[in-house]
Length: 331
Image (cartoon, rainbow, N blue to C red):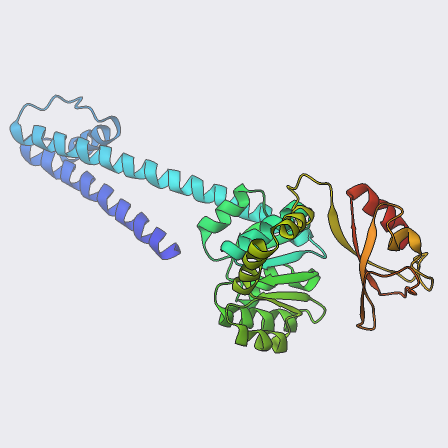
């Protein structure tokens, strides 16, 4: 880019010198002016685009017309160049602002790729109010994401330096949502080496690559085509159930229902005690529908007799208000 700018500058200087030399020599030959007077008239003509001398011979008048038209073209090109420079300056300022915001992020998520899958992931995180930064090589996709209110950067997410610029050492999780499994595999390997504690969710187009991505370090692997096919089949076979689940999982649903995952801390009032009927049967409005134990076991539809231990993850269904009340009991 810098070499192109230098070429532009030298090209513009060459045009200016050429016009100045042509005017000086031409007015000396056609109008008989001294070189000093000819150079003066040339400068005035190029700056004002007006023949103040009043040349009467055909050669000088022809030269005046050529120089005026050339000068107009030069000015138009300079204005275009200046506009491009100002736009580039504005983009640089915006990129710096985004970089400053990214540098302040902590426990955030990194979304790699802003294609159809990646953009949907970014939109869901934005709706959830989760801190994240999206990466994509395509400036148009990044521009679209910025216009939607997302934090996005024009970077190649398969480059380790790009992941470092996105604050991967401070991140809580990463979503590798590129369209090529090989690129997602490379991202997973790089991300896992840069942050061993990172939660990594990777996209796979081919089912046989799921095992490879998990071996590379992905905690979860999603197959969009498989998920889409299962959802469509469920819509055809169990439409009412799917409608209910869509309402629960969608922020745009008419019902005020959400599903949250809450981790039991060591200082939690529930730690070391039974779950109790208040949460098991939803007496406070929110219901624990599953318990993912810290030991790796899972319990669905708990009765309330289950002992809760630090590190257990409770999957809870309820309204925002009820979930807030449940969080006060759990955390």
